[in-house]
Image 1 (cartoon, rainbow, N blue to C red):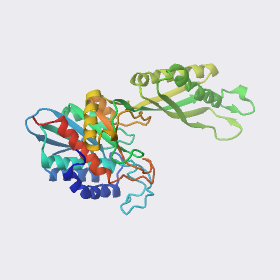
Image 2: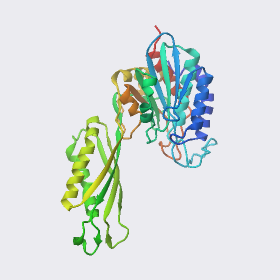
Image 3: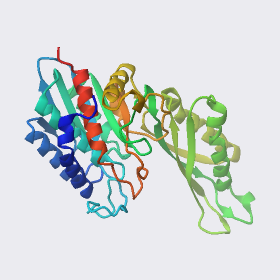
Length: 386
């Protein structure tokens, strides 16, 4: 079963929807127009519409038959603070804001699936079409869950999909276990004692303390974690001093940690505290740590992954479904939904395009029919009629 014929018929309309969304991008928690477009189309197709979760979130509910099973399908809607350089006729009309990650395409593929399923109703149960705001680092999925997403709209399983440049068009990657890393941020404010740069013995030099700390933090990866386990600790900002002949009072370090292991993720705040306290004590300095666990590991459960692999295989063919792709060290807030409900997050090939988050990136409209066909096939297999 390749691309669904009916979806192929209205694929040109889907491209129009996608390009309209692309021309009118909105940042996280500001997706008012996008939400209006989504809600209007769902209502037009006879799908029950609910609004307000996480502010601009939209949930469409479509029930068919007498089955009591329900699954969720999620798409993200927000854009990025990037000035577009694609030169497309449908380029962003909102200067400095751009759909540089393909969320316009994700939203459109789920809308296409919703339209098809509302027309055919070839399933038994309930589908929740979850259109999420604010995926780009500001916690839209977490907010939807906290607002009661799965209490108001219970789901046995929840599924997500993201386009992936570099994977050929028409191919999918569907892998059990960790597929994207937990992502944390940290800020360390080191307090020393300033002095004249020619008389460092009169102070406590926080630049030396911070320099030692940058190196010491790398021992979490090299000496505290097994070599077979993935962990990245990156100090990306080092702010100190204002002039050449003054040792400053303080230094600020900022950075990020990424890991694929939930246990390692849970241990990182304590590991940071011990190393920072120890290094500072060595020099007689002190420090305050703001360690934030922003995203959990994106973890695919076994049975939902099997269903997703079967659906992708039905659409693309077995040779075009990767089941052993290595995890990415980037993060994804869909992990919060997977922490609440078991599910699966897949990647769909966007072909040879610029990388996501690049000002020349554009979603491949030829992917729309593939993605919508995957969604509908997944639903018809998960909620199969007797």
